Amino acid sequence: MQPQQIIAQIVGTVALGFNSLSYLQKKKSTLLLFQLIGSALFCTNYLLLGAMSGAILNVVGIFRAIIFLWKDKLHADNIFWTSGFIGAYLGSYALIFTVFGKEPTVPNLIIEILPVIAMIAIHLSFRYTSTKMVRRFGLVSSPMWLTYNIAIFSIPAIICEIVNLSSIIIGILKFDIKRKEK
Image 1 (cartoon, helix red, strand yellow):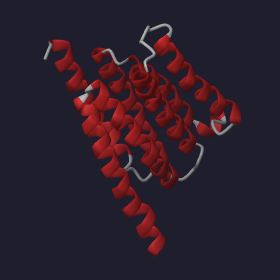
Image 2 (tube, rainbow, N blue to C red; image 1 turned 60 degrees about the vertical axis):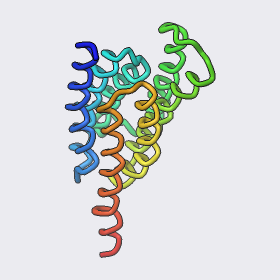
Image 3 (spheres, helix red, strand yellow; image 1 turned 45 degrees about the vertical axis):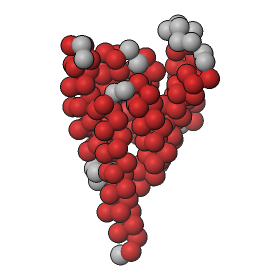
Image 4 (tube, one colour; image 1 turned 135 degrees about the vertical axis):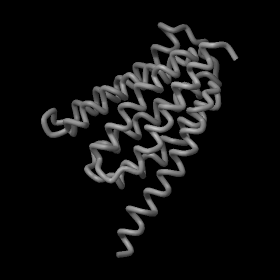
């Protein structure tokens, strides 16, 4: 492994910690803060690996987390924010094949759309006030990111999504199902 790849894996490992712990947070603001930090670190991880979709989407994810941290002041639940972010996610998909010159083969078209769908799912979850809904949409997002990370071979990102899925399930069991039983 080259030094740049080793650094990418180290940065990704730190990002893994923040993203994985995010789903175990009780308060939505803490969950978003953890995801913001994780997004910034994974952006660096993806850049170092040359995975531009992951990098661009994480930049958008940083802005999304900031907007939703100040949801009330910025009216983040406004349909214009949602439309703008969905446009940014879809725009990043187009950039990969135009500006960054990735060959638009069927496998590439499929692999590169997975994190876009994942980001849209997570964005839609942020429109809800409950962490329960964030966890539920995470059940859509996480497998998509997992598949993408396997394709680009980001070891910490692969582990992160496996841990995320576990954290989401634990969070659902601990906060959603257990609370429902009481």
